[in-house]
Image 1 (tube, one colour):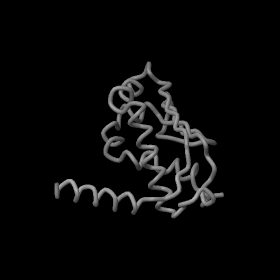
Image 2: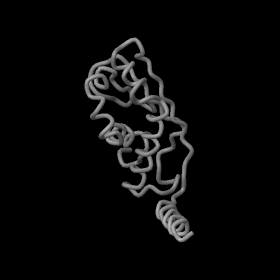
Image 3: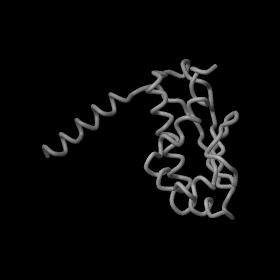
Length: 133
């Protein structure tokens, strides 16, 4: 019983420490490179759900880092899309879309897993915050 109570108190404190106004963002992830080795590797080792969760985590991290805790402080982005594509480079963002290289994922899948938030962090900064407007 004491263990449950301690866990409950800890979880409650953690929830209170991270409370901030949320903004509903629809995350869309599409693998457009299924016919490539990198697209297959993305599908098999990362997947759509994992990538969406990492995008949510990166979004929360960015908003906390830049202390953008209310919708008024943030850039209004109802939808952010990430497309895995057969392209050169690592990733580029344009508008509300992040284009990720399947070639990069093929070669660097372990780096993507280890530094998962960082791979989404920089493109999302430009999409989510007002610091570069």
